[in-house]
Length: 452
Image (tube, rainbow, N blue to C red; front, side):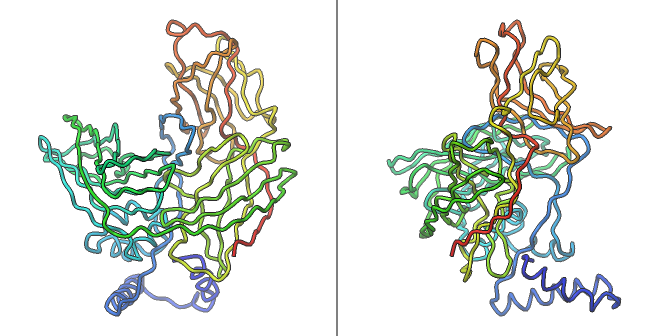
């Protein structure tokens, strides 16, 4: 249910608090209503979801990405009864898609509005099969849903490499991509997994015929697949709102240049005043809100931003393309930022000592775990961001290989770290300067800007 419906239900809640109704009867009534709406052709609303904390100790190692920030999505649950959520997921042909996109109400809306195109092209090698199930496309991007299947159960289904090329002789320049394996949070062997590739281009996408190359690794196989497919449905055109409006949050001037709405996402183009005293890292709370209070927030699983320059970013929100609100507002409240002269950490790896960091001393306890330089991060809540995007030694030599790690220990301490070469591999000189890409420090405001 969307925010407006939740608000209406909350107003009714008090009247029904003393009424006792079994959960089975509630589920039956919901399912009956859904089935009736389906028979009569009424579209069913997708359920909204909320994040829940991950396991106490979980570790990730990801490459650093300059052009895009990849958000980590943890265990989630749908905010309706389990029976209803299960029913939606079991609709013919929709189970895999719903499981993948339920975190993104824009993509859910595209599916509900029949904008998903079925593909169904398969290639098989040595008992391993890859199928392109379906595609959602707009002028600048593709979301490709696929399934990997094996004759034998496997613990590992990994897409190691991916490349998309035009099949009709045209050219395009890939701007950013996001891909991985969508699978349950356990180590049980399984015969298949489903996931999605996100690809966005620097120019308007003219071609409709493609060749997808995927290098897939399982427990006992390593195969490369070449799968051709084409887009048949007309691609819907973007909607652009020219803004050029400036706001100030705790003395920091930010200009909203324009907002472009695509079926896959909303692009919010921002520029920062070069004279700002702080370096802005992340818009923690930014969203579109309509006249009924329904909101479209940041992309929660995939490409969340593009870095244009030191003074310019493009942020991506979930798409409201298939909605036609009478009024629309851009809301900004909470932003990650630190003083520009504190936007780095200086550390001596030999002495295991932090020489400089942003005010507040939230980093401590420098230590080594194999080739990982580790820090303890002092925050009340989990901070799901990798802090550093480059590391240079005292001679300005870049020694960062782009690998980061983050996990929470059993005692509650959050550990973050980066992979560094050994002294035998690279004779770097201390101290090291670690440039920050994120940090747990915020500025806050109350901005509500009219879009339409």
